[in-house]
Length: 180
Image (tube, rainbow, N blue to C red):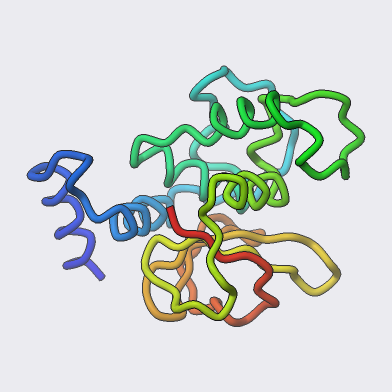
């Protein structure tokens, strides 16, 4: 694992962003949160826009995705918010909002799933999983969950104890598979 991270770090220095293997870089960006984001915190927080984030030591599963994408130069807070402003009716109505909220919308798994699908990033649930793929699950009890594939069955996610790298790809019911 250390050799993969070293390789990704070298690629980040040597290659321009356009030439980097996005999946591997995204997986390494997700892994960089393990041991750093140690607190599960679903609190509503007023964020700077664009580029806002919770303190790095806290967050939810969606924050793993947001931070990993931000490390590869993609601001999901801004992209999701802009898409929701253009097509609010295409997004879930589970929270009773009447308009987009840049503080929280990108931190909700169903909104990320909708955004990725609208951007044409969906893959078949049975398609092979690669490093950097984003996977959404339905947990027991019906809760949504999301993480980033690192390799094989290993995923970086935050299911309640901070960002972890664990072999849980098929541990829950997969309901979404996305590749950037």
